Length: 573
Image (cartoon, rainbow, N blue to C red; front, side, top):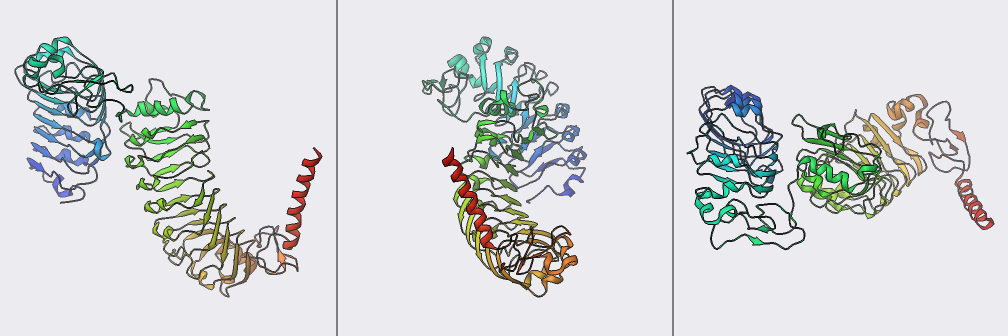
């Protein structure tokens, strides 16, 4: 079975065991799972399930085993899970490796007298280890609790000493202390505490033990670490700098610290104890996880830290019109990122952007980027909007743009593109193409936009290039085309085009051919007749259709005079 959990399963109310591990399941766990009130065992580990664990799971009074490990779950644990009094084994292990990560504080599970296996490693849990966790479990039981690889802080609490035997894994957190009384619990950690004391629970600060973060054999000691970037916490599994799993709050604070946060135009709520969802520019989902960071034109300065890619539910990141640098390395970790707005910033390269396979909108306009349009963009096959305007891209329009068949908006204007106009003949959903102010030559292909929807409203701007010849009759297949063709070198219009009444917002219905382009021997400030204020006026010297000035010689003379005046003024000063 692959795909989402079948609806029929939720309707099998007498079901007692449901095992669908490693089945390739996707989507989320539906709230209707709360109908399976006879369910005792639920195994959904090793799939691609995402989203928050539904509150309704806490409505299953018979449930004793719940394994959701190795999925992409996020959000926080619903408090309703603490109602599962029959629970014996609970695992949400390793959600981060697939791009998820459950966050928030740990649940205490204080009314589960049989819960001896509690595995929550590999997530984004934060805060303290609750001193009363598993408080209803008898002292002579031997619980296994794995809280490793989270962002837990503080101390390993002395209250856990109520258990004579316990296997407690808390390595790779931000733990600062072990209560000394625990280091005398000889039967803890499968008896290792008897031999190695506190080191059997966690290696001390400024030491490490590969993979385990603690001492488990006489031949495997906690090794001193002299790396200046070592973290001063207990239970580290490596020496020196490494990717720290930060909480969402810490990631946002890092952006604030590195990008001039104190001097932002707007920074309401930032660095206070209020919910991060109340911070200016930040929006969250129902699970209080960041989905949007919008901070355009806010006096941000510096390099955006790549830790933003670790925000598990980030969909929109927009920092336009700020003096920030941006590195795309690691963007493949942002598994939910759909919109990236970086226009008018200080990015100098887009190497690595091709790994952002979930992107639907990419805006890197106005960044002085040059050379050929990077082929990396061709990997972003889900793109619906691509804005590369106001840069210095050169060369031909790349044919691989046709691979981006979901495109609705393509903006390449104000670059230095040359060669012939591409046909864009595979675009079925296109709504807007802007190519004005380049150096395109040749004629409009007869197959231009031939896959576009006939009755869709489509805007095309090809003005201010060096296009020639006849505007092809085949464009009459598009009923609602608004097309800008002024200031090229066109010599004619296809015979049927002047009857396309819906073109140019019905200007053609009112003004005929002149609603597309003014004829030879005339001009208009728009290059066409669009209103009573913009008629096509006589200019016998104009040899091409759609001119916005009277005679090219006059335009060249005006440009030359402007340069001469500037030079003369400079010399005078």
